[in-house]
Length: 171
Ligand code: IMP
Ligand code: MG
Image 1 (cartoon, protein in one colour):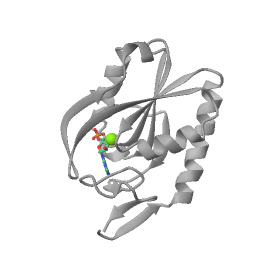
Image 2 (cartoon, rainbow, N blue to C red; image 1 turned 45 degrees about the horizontal axis):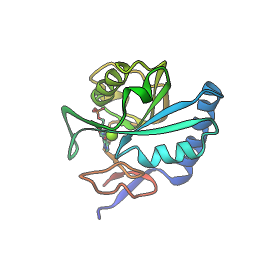
Image 3 (tube, rainbow, N blue to C red; image 1 turned 180 degrees about the vertical axis):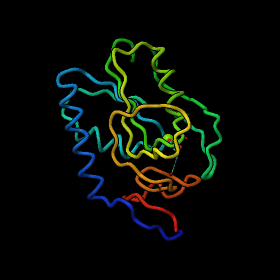
Image 4 (cartoon, helix red, strand yellow; image 1 turned 90 degrees about the vertical axis):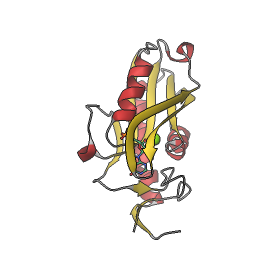
């Protein structure tokens, strides 16, 4: 395993996750929210976020991938278990690990929107704003980061490093 330089440690992440969960509860209150976790990267974040969310929540999963190594291929593959009956007229939040070019989210957002949710918001752990290629708004952001390839806390490099409890950069 290569050396990893820490960007955000477990404490930083925990504090921010709790803040976001609180913010969300303030917004949704008693309304039920369907959280869509994007596999595999957002799994750790989604679990921690939902454990700290005090409202009524459902959890769905979707698999969207556009990356090979450290490069975005620009071609998005979707593999999802969600259906219109779980989404129509509901408050929906997509939980992402990281927004980079924005292509994956834009694609996914359009797809979900066709299922006619009552509202649709985006929550991402990390945002690499400088890398954006398509226009997409994020509603909840854990941390904004520079143009760095990061791993850990669910994020991978060729399927490795997801299990690191912190977020870092491969040196
Ligand atoms: P986008 O479509 O270019 O926005 O790509 C977003 C997806 O690429 C994310 O959901 C991640 O799976 C992956 N990705 C982008 N940047 C990184 C990174 O720094 N580390 C690990 N995965 C990344
Ligand atoms: Mg992802």
